[in-house]
Length: 112
View 1 (tube, rainbow, N blue to C red):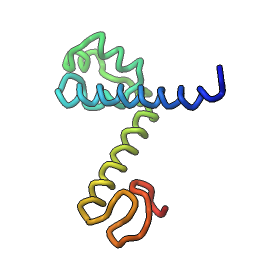
View 2: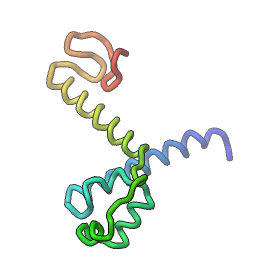
View 3: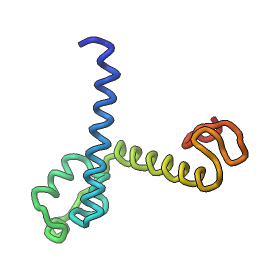
């Protein structure tokens, strides 16, 4: 494999993870899955999908310990932070590269 493809393949993996998280959050929004479904490991999500019903899954013991996917939690948390910071900045009179007082910095990255 060419070294130039490593960056492209990494980007494609990130895009795929975002798509999967988006699909899982959409299923959570429509109450098809438990609230914590989007932050669970793939194995835990597959176990729920085999049962398919929230109440039946809870009766079987639900998600066990050690089923949190910290990478997904970080991605969701980081995305939420940047989104909220961007909305606040836009409402307070700033832009993507300038805060409300006109100082140059990047939205979502404090102190830069």
